[in-house]
Length: 292
Image 1: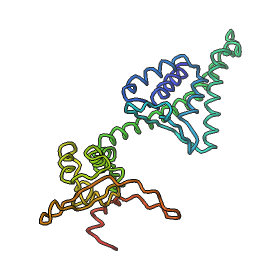
Image 2: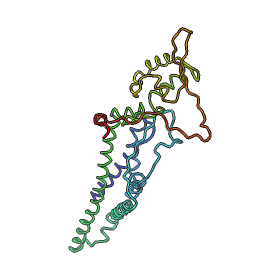
Image 3: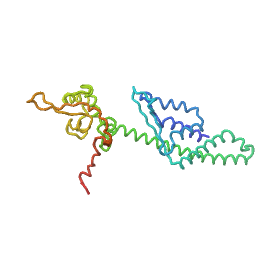
């Protein structure tokens, strides 16, 4: 019975922690709140929850931040861990856990009625039954511990990732770990859109003015971060801005002006173009060795 209690306790811990989602200011208390709700659940109910959200078939999808229930005025976050299985393995695992539930109920409600503990043979038979039951329960417990260990290691890997420079580059700058990106997703283009919109709306504004605002508000967003030599290159390649050169007088040098590019509907029959961006950075050893 102790092993069954250990199984139930571990299962409740897993179910309380394998998913979190919602506004970031609510995340810290979610596991404790979920644990409180799970505290009164039977083993059968816990098993149903297990196969409804954690042990799932391959291809399982679960929307953790549905649009109609996610507030738009606060930052939200979601993460979930799954143990996916092919249909045959999943069916076998479900059956094994259901047998554990049935065994638990048998031990709790029918053990004394099943064996005559008033004589030696009845006690011997009961001991043999309990030893066999322990092995069956322990097999499921070790399986559950394996899932917990896998989830723990995945959480460690995720924590390491979100603290890495590569993840921060992806999150804030739109640069993938291999160095590739689409201009529309980059931090520099998002910041440029904001500054141009703030300074001029849909009208033209001098690029020098935009650059001054970028330096003041987004000093880390530079063309060089995105493998570009100039601001004009970023503006032109992104496809999100119009760029033209003007003179203040006939003798003055031309200076660049920029505006947000108006949306242009796709012409009938025209193919949708691939979003502009940069491909992966060639590994250093490939650059050294050259083509084989």
